[in-house]
Length: 573
Image 1 (cartoon, rainbow, N blue to C red):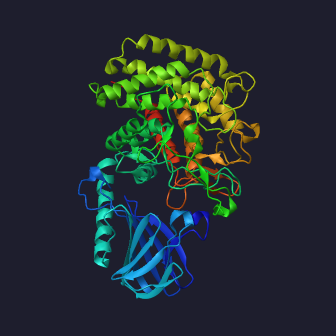
Image 2: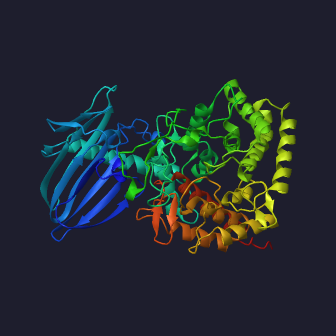
Image 3: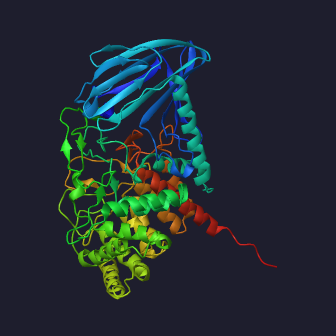
């Protein structure tokens, strides 16, 4: 990944020596990527996949993945000379490892890992780079593998070409078994929804069930700008929305594992201070942010950051998102486990106590805290779901007080969250600025989708927060609310929220139009970034973005349900 941020920070290319054109696809029902290279003399394919190991249980996809990248090359017609260039640069390009030949490949040592490269033909070594070329004729092929192990693990291993192809076959078969067992959505945009389910599965860390926000850090929100963040972590915020998406695009098994991770990572016996809003893939709390000054950034977009300082922010919406997730799993809650029930009760108690405080909000602003409408909305969700869960949690005594605070939040939102100046719900109490997060009000059940105030908010967002291509900004950066310099692109999640809100309002045609505009910016293999520069069509922000795929799945499902509601019932004789 560091190679995206600086050309000297590492890469591994397999491509024809001659000039070529190329195109890509995911093999059906898998996340195995096939790239086809076409030259004047012949055509070759490279199939890349992360090994899923030898587990035969499709419910446990990747649970014993061996940290091996598989790369299989096939010449499918004519003749192609294949060039291999291997430049491993651990520690974000700080380390140029020592390479040494061994039987069947080479070993790269340096930094915290040992990497074993299995190669079917010798590569020459020069200054930490291994390179070579081999001619292939029609029906010939070769295979490579990169096994990564930490210094603390038992050790590296090399694989024969036959073993690599066998692992690749097993991996492809495992993906297809998982897809056929788990993916049953049959509504509109079926293929895109199923792909998004696989993307969320691919972004998960199977040992814990964590789903990261994106696989990259510091891909910019504006090329050349400084809005560059590390998204390789798991946000509580994503939990409730991801639950809904997994229910549609994957299955409850994946959702249950993610819920278990989130509650374990967030669990604490003390909530006198605020709940942390994001965690590492192993449940780590320390995500200290720092800058990597030696990296030039994507097309000069600096600084490059690792870690995320937003982890220490106060963001009040997280109580609602965790309790909404628990509410989703009400039938599976272990009411006999005091650790779980006491933790969930403490979330509701804390939301009831702190909802009136200002915070940094859903967009993790680095400006002054405010009374953001979305944060109040999700505190309302926390208490609304807690009241429903009270009996299961053994908290019927607390429920009346939760209900009182829930109703107080509702009154405050309706009174102070509405702006007469813009004729819509606003970004924060007393503000006349719009924010796309207000579209969540019908999605979480605060107001009906066809409430006149929501219809007005939908119209205001569509008119004033959309760019000329019809995609939606989170908010206008020119207001200075986020305390950051520069601008950003339109936000795909917010565009899908607009589509979902339109569907809930019964505006199916508008919802479909908005949805189709958003998915038209997927890349050649269907992946979505965080943002889009519609003037150029460039994808912006970290990639692929789980939240964009989550928003797409939930919007597609909402449109499907709205279409069903509009189908006239047959007249009974």
